[in-house]
Image 1 (cartoon, rainbow, N blue to C red):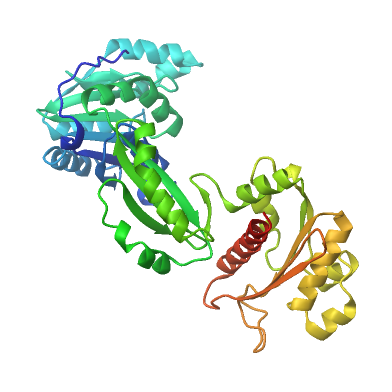
Image 2 (cartoon, rainbow, N blue to C red):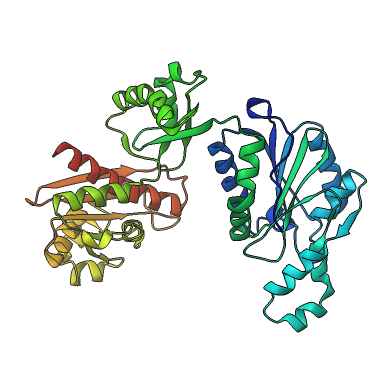
Length: 432
């Protein structure tokens, strides 16, 4: 099942590409569509921009109509899903139907499938597997090195090509890397690439960031685009160039300007996150860290241990949810708990002291608050959080946060963790 890579097509900026994801399970939200994201990233490395992604269920008539519609506006269609032996695997026959074409059995594919099957006798008796062997007459076959369902490269009409892949991510990626990448590069790419560098900011809102970079938002090449989430703002700088080195040169002055505008807020780039940045810095300093958590319930510890290499700096934590544990394990005095309550500056500081001493660590962070939806009072509303950070010389930074009480429990916990980590980052930054 080898792919013939000679194929007429348009190239570069003239190529209009679409991604079509097929599967009712995607529409129902049963699985997350990671395939479209991965394909989009691959297209960028080939200098191909795409302007539309569509998800459709397992319905033959709708799939045929949509394929026909796409063929009238695009040059290249990449599909994932709907290739296999089950009744809802309708992609190949539906695409052929869109162009009034018949599908035919490819005997060599059936031989390949039988070779791949472990339980050959029972599988060969299941004739539904043969469904994977039927393709339009002129379709080129994309070998599936990790599964039984091959894909196809087919040009049903002039200046319109379809590439089909199964929905299983590992199979789709292997097929892309073995055959499709080379085919698309040879027939559709103009030799340029899209290259992106993302700066990550925290402690500043998207509206403020956007206001400060108005002059950059209308650039054509490179482009600058802000993206916001609960804890951070991302600034993605994207350029089209002939090579990565050329792309980096184009991005360099934009990146320099952004670093000058937001030096305090930029904590990392691309795949970095706050825990990874902190771990790297603490390793360089040869310093350790521990946590005492109440309202975050272990989320802070989970964030730091999600990064490989955390064991080099992170000694451990105490999840002191009850007052008894705060007193017995962290040695928080009973009078502090009685006089000020668990959610207080005094108790947060005592928690940090207790966990730092217990684990003999350079740094300690404690957090106590009211994440809701219950447990609040007039003086201590939902979203009230106290953080204490204790350093190598027992210096202490005490932080009070009042998050929007309309935020849900998970959001308040996430914001608390982000403030813990970012506050330590700023301390380390000031001590360089």
